[in-house]
Image (cartoon, rainbow, N blue to C red; front, side, top):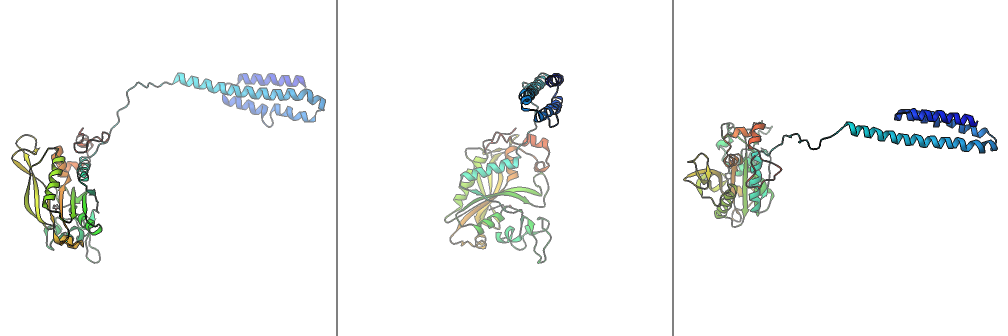
Amino acid sequence: MTLEIEKLEGELLAQLNAADNEASLEELRVSALGKKGSVSELLKGLGGMSSEERQVFGPKVNGLKNKLNDLINEKKIALADKALDERLLAEHLDVTLPAKARRQGSIHPIMQVFEEVATIFADMGFSVKEGPDIEDDFHNFTALNFPEKHPARDMHDTFFMQPNEKGERKLLRTHTSPVQIRTMKNEKPPIRIVAPGRTYRCDYDQTHTPMFHQIEGLVIEEGVHMGHLKGVLMEFLARFFEVDGVDVQFRPHHFPFTEPSAEVDVRCDRSGKELKIGTGNDWLEILGCGMVHPNVLTACGLDPNVYQGFAFGMGIDRLAMLKYGIPDLRDMFNSDVRWLENFGFEALFSPSITSGLSR
Ligand code: DAH
């Protein structure tokens, strides 16, 4: 029996020596220590021995079992270490190599200008409101005091949806002014809001696209007058065009929803190559504005003898073209990456909101 054990030990150690990977080690473990393994069979045999025999062979067989178990585990670790060493030698990473250039996205000038304009008005206590692009006749026209036969209600000017059973047609809003109506109906004065968003008209040339962007302003409070309107707009224009002060001209105009109404021009210089805002002998039309018409206040359930207010509206796209020298409006919406690389803004630098960091 002793001989048998020693012989088995010799064989097992030779197999252990020869095993040079994890799979053959595992094979050896199963063949010796598994349920039907050679060492396990010897252990089972101890049961049939006399107690004297067991005292002699028990420790020997158990010793063999423990020794083999330990050796297999040690070798497993040694093999894993060796494999890692080989990989470390074979593979290498040069961390000093320059990184691959990655294409970076940029902020569209329209979004940049939205941010700039909203920030300036936020500093003056305005909050931002939004309304739906698909409007009804009431909010887009009737409540804004448009007469029944106004040309904007014409099929040629406005995108109308198919009429419903009652003959009512929804439309793509032609301006951001309906947000005024929605705000006055839902909120109590004092109201100070700006409403940026997409607007739609049947128009297409260098300075017009069927979809464009506007920002609307509305202030409703007791005792508001045109002086406030002028002050707010002058502050806005000076900050937006980054000049110390701007000369503005309020030119009488007509809008159905304001009375009196005006268009606002800023002083500019067209004599050089570039358009300069703030100096010169020319005027540049920027926006429309006025005191909210009593009919509009009434349509929204506000008493015109108590509340007054002013409103203004301007084209975001036009502001972007003027400030950043973009010659053709249609290019803004062509989704040409080369154009965006040229006119887009770095997002990561979080540019000072009124100056922007052009690439
Ligand atoms: N809604 C006008 C337009 O689309 C712009 C406008 C003018 C808005 C005067 C106003 C305003 O709020 O008071 O041409």
